Image (cartoon, rainbow, N blue to C red; front, top):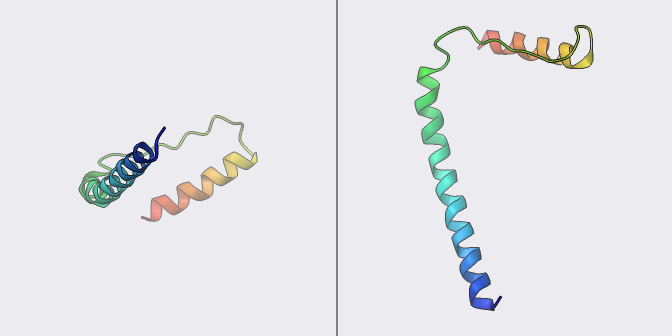
Length: 66
């Protein structure tokens, strides 16, 4: 690849990253008003009493407060 191709690729990457960064907060603001409309179920595919279960319970408790 030539230097101009690398510069063009870097510019396109930067433009894409800026576009995604700008759309992120707008999409979150729209979804925040709609979500959750019903009960959220947190499923862990591991047996009870293990580390994943304990972490899921702590996360679920904090989410229920919000």
